[in-house]
Amino acid sequence: MKKRKIHTITFIALDYFAAAISWFTFFLYRKYLIEPDKFGYEIPFEASQNFFLGLIYVPIYWLLLYYLAGYYNDVWKRSRIKDLSSTFTISVIGVIILFFFLLLDDEVKSYKAYYFTIFTLFILHYGLTIFFRIISSTYIKSLLRDKKIGFNAIIVGNNLRALDLVNEIITDRISQGYRLIGFVDSETTNTYLNSKLKLLGTYENLPELIKKYHVEEVIIAIESSKHNEIIKVTNLLEDEKVILKIIPDIYDVMAGSVKMQNVLGTVLIEINYEMMPVWQKVVKRTIDVVVSFLMIILFSPLYLALAIFIKMSSPGPVFFRQIRIGLWGKPFHIIKFRTMCIDAEADGPALASKNDTRITPIGKWLRKYRLDEIPQFFNVLIGEMSLVGPRPERKFFIDQIIKIAPHYKHLHRVRPGITSWGQVKYGYAENVEQMVERLKFDILYIENMSIAVDLRILLYTISTILKGSGK
Image 1 (cartoon, rainbow, N blue to C red):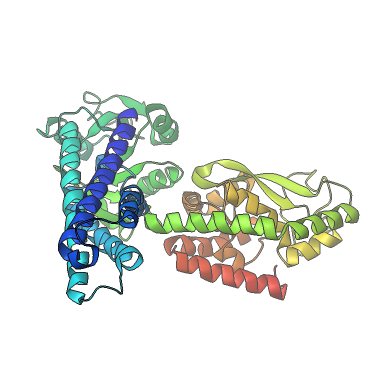
Image 2: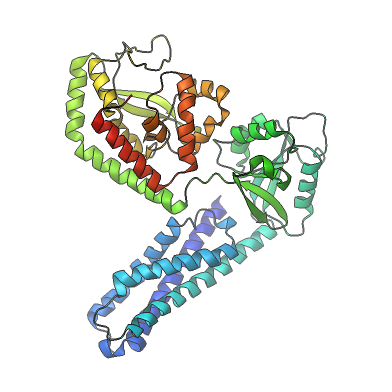
């Protein structure tokens, strides 16, 4: 992991260096060759100030663009071919933005100068950036080939298909970066891999094995006819930050949920769990932080007023904290305004119903207008929740839901939200069956996640609050 961080910092430094050189060269080219009549051959003090500020801030601007595009997520898995196209696209967008914000000048006499300006900046930036990126990516590929770096991987299965795959990985002249830790299997009769790899247990042990060996990839080599076992493995790994791959023969099983990828010699199918493009994830998180901060500040008088009403209406604390399951299955304390009497769950966990006697008079009003949820802006601010996402549940109820709908764990791949599509369409669930019914709306949201969808859900939520139609 230390090497990967060093390589990531190196990639960032090279991008900064390329952006600085391109801006330096472009600045001189523009002043002396494109617009010499305007500036002359002596750079004025104001222009020299802009020159040095540009050397600092313009490269930072480019780094931000590449960060939003996800370029620095995992530099060991960069594709040189993809770099050519993605860098081209970002360079075009970045240059156009720079042109309109920094370079557009009404004093220029000829539009021809504009064309030279934007074209020159693009050629310089793209050329230098891709030059350094190809060199650095080639170096990383050489380290992978020489097995100096790699990704810890586990094989699921112990059959002829698994044996062929392992032999191909082991005997391949050019290493693909896999470091095979061992294999897991539910069968005890097959012994195909026993002489090749260490048996680590059954697939039920995968979550603890992933943590123990810092596994990054899990390769499923189960027979394609064993659909149930494949689904069990994929459901089991929903909460794990690993790349899941399968052998192409079983593509039909996962149709619609995967994308084809060539990993040098061995062709595998990578199950794609990416819900949103990286830039949209960054924008979504930025909106979460900004809106939550503003809501906490603007609603502070409302927080105080509600706190007084709650305290006056019934004995007990103002806020209610409860452990819920969030992103990647991690527990966190959700914060709400208390809407029930104290010791409401003295007899065990129980969901609220429409005419629940445990709900206080002020609590009914708070739930109707969803005001009991607004303290969760603190959860959003610290990264435990999002403004929009599936509502988090307690482990007690999740265990019951999974028995009926194992795909519920799919929800743990995104941050839970203050509001959700399921909450807007269905409202509060009063039992496990209703939770399962609401689940289809949350799955639908996850499969169609975007900033535009989030904005629509927020508008529907605001409408629900204003109408007081919260269930």
